Length: 253
Image (cartoon, rainbow, N blue to C red; front, side, top):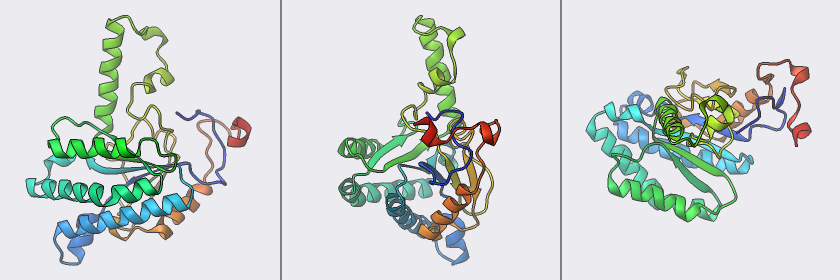
């Protein structure tokens, strides 16, 4: 995980970008199209964004693809979303692997259709040794659920005398999160104009720069990503301290 004191300004751009991909349904509704078409165009936007992240030398890209609350949607739409995931993995895995992209999934796999759970494992196994962009897909994910699961695991470890509650700190707590080997996002983007986190990376985004963009996700492209990155570069990142006190990344290296 990242140090609390990192850098006061970010001229070199973010290492880790997280995106709440919002607006597929509204994009379709404005065009008189079914919601499924909005989701299909959203997959195309994801492909563009992955390519752009590679070209812009972003090291980690985390996307919110299916939340634990999305089970409340109609069964037909859930089935359509799962179908698009099947297509994405089957069609795009070889290309991602060829680009040295490492694919990771975070979120619960309990209750997923067996073939979906198998596809997630296959993508991770095939790309696990790749050294390029790490694409983290939050699927069947909820931040509160992740934090609660970590708390339960810590309580169980304490009962087994494997951890002392009195010495628990942020670093040792983070070891129980699904993202324990992933740096916190520097930049978190939400599309569609909505301004909320929707149970996404609540612990990890404590010091992320938040950029809310009016563009609907199917229209998101490299230009939109660069616009968000430029906004990030202009931010003062003080992490609770004063700008003059926050050492640069180069000073920390």
